[in-house]
Amino acid sequence: DVKVTQSSRYLVKRTGEKVFLECVQDMDHENMFWYRQDPGLGLRLIYFSYDVKMKEKGDIPEGYSVSREKKERFSLILESASTNQTSMYLCASSFRGAAKNIQYFGAGTRLSVL
Amino acid sequence: AQKITQTQPGMFVQEKEAVTLDCTYDTSDPSYGLFWYKQPSSGEMIFLIYQGSYDQQNATEGRYSLNFQKARKSANLVISASQLGDSAMYFCAMRVIQGAQKLVFGQGTRLTINP
Image (cartoon, rainbow over all chains, first blue to last red; front, side, top):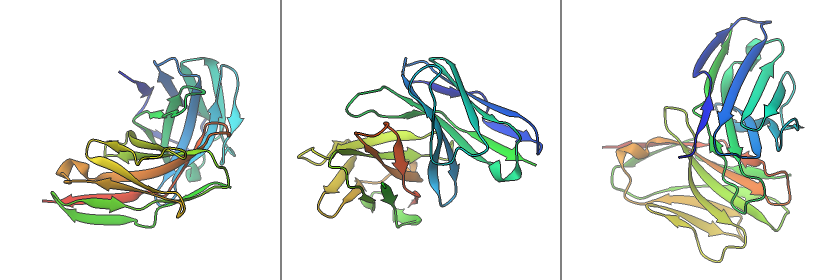
């Protein structure tokens, strides 16, 4: 069965803290994605990776960085958390090159920055 | 630029009725894919149905069907015989085949099924 696991469902952090959001997939997918979800805005792509150590900026990369040292793991890093980064964060993965290329999602991490 | 528009922020439907969720898209690429996802209150995004731009027939998956009207650039989701468990957020998304395999999402529609 397809599995994308995000390390935390809920996270509360202080302004200025360094925050790590972890995502692991067990489907041997090449592509991995980090999205941010806000009411009325849908999902917006922060960063994605199509291979180990490769990364590309999405639509809203400011204030975020990512790391992909192993194929199954993709980390989102908030170098200095700010209150406007309070949001729901969703990780997804997919095969590269498949015609349908369905993205499979984790359950999300709801981050509050106080 | 690619864009997805969902004009219904919320919809309320009686159980067992059919419901149509609207989605229009904008792209200049001839090759693309359209997706619908369901997000229950638990938060996980669940893939429902896919339509390729060159597919001749409308996609169907159980109670879900996609009303694909290419000339009008619309890809509406139809849920037949709605159930209480269908209450959720629904997102329409598009992927440009020649692009980097990323999805562009609409704003979502919150569907509530009343008993």
